[in-house]
Amino acid sequence: MELFDTHCHFESSDADETAAILRRAMDAGVTRVMAVGGSAELNAGVAAAVGAATGDAALPEVAAAIGLDRDQAGKEESLDSMDWSRAAAVGEIGLDYHYPGATRGEQMALFARQLEIARSIGLPVVVHTREADDDTLGLLREIPSRGIIHCFTGSPRFCRALLDLGFMISISGIVTFRAADNVREAALLVPDDRILVETDSPFLAPVPMRGKANEPAFIVYTARFLATLRSTPPDEFAALTTRNAIATLGAVHAA
Image (cartoon, rainbow, N blue to C red; front, side, top):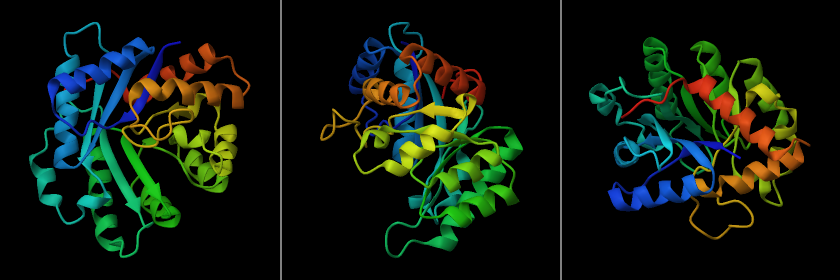
């Protein structure tokens, strides 16, 4: 079973630590990952992951996504100095109104600007959305985009609306959690050619690894769970999600 983890973060830029995480992923059958940014620190972790994997056939191929997430609202000036030429995607970007005091206007402005950047340079986007369904849909309709809705946690209705806009739906280890009936329902309605799988590591370790720091190697548990849920042989599910990721992201780029 060969898997593509379409969303993982590297919070450290330590070369040895990053290489060790990637080596465990390869040993688990994860042959490709997308390292995802969202802040200056996470974008540096993306570069470290790409650097660790470049030229080393014993490690997974690493695609790069860089950008500014909703917590970076007000820091748009750093977008001007980003080198998008080696990126496979812009992200993660998006909206999150879960916490009190969320800066709705600033988040929307930052999200919209990066959607425009992605459209202008022809890259897919990696979108985070939580408790912001209407605003997310509104901006994605206003600024036509393509890409991935990562770590989907919304309703089946929201999932259908995003599918109607042409987005890929990426499912994380949350689908294995006892209270995640909505995610399981959504995972069942996503067509075979539109579903992806991710860890969102180091967060959201799936059952049976809950309580541990998540890492790309743990995507095996989520993929097996989803394969069973969708009544698909595990190897077939791994192959179709890998094909979907490659089709969405294109060739792996170095950061």
